[in-house]
Picture 1 (cartoon, helix red, strand yellow):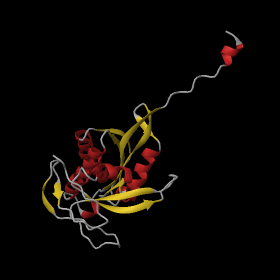
Picture 2 (spheres, rainbow, N blue to C red):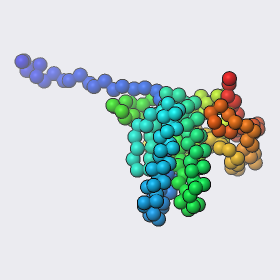
Picture 3 (tube, one colour):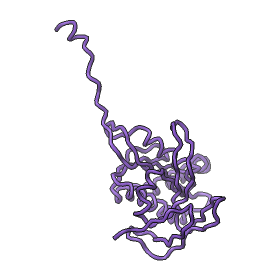
Picture 4 (cartoon, rainbow, N blue to C red):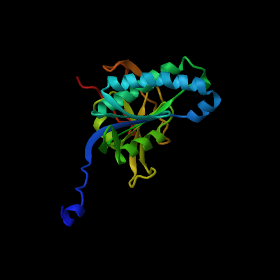
Length: 226
């Protein structure tokens, strides 16, 4: 073997990329719950995770990773990612009614759609990081989505959304447009609006209540198409 052959640089490894919908979730106040009762918290987490895992599979998602109280999943469809998030929050709200108020376990969920790097079963990149930042902006039991996600679901799902504007988030170069998914009978709490969220009027095709949506400027209306 010649010297040139021995020292020739190896070709750069090809990095696989893809577009995907990313769902990031964790428990609000997990440390407090663990500090109060570790065993009870672990039982509740296990029970809630069983609900979440079942729904993620039902909406054709894939769990990418879990660590402690956090869940990272991906979906081929943005619509199904949001449907899954709503189903998770609705189902866990019911699960929590079986627990004392101070033992309720509520997840925050963030959803983004973006380009990610693929390494085996794992995904990396700003697309994932933004989903995690959206999760951190969500309230307990709530869902925050990026502007990209909102653009794709606003005319496809019977939901309303509160515009939280552009948010500067950690380690992301540009501000991220954030929308909050308004669930059930929540009040839209923007100081710019006194509008309350719509009331339940029936049952939607995905098994949770469809909504009659008012027309304030801060809400984006969407309907299922048959």
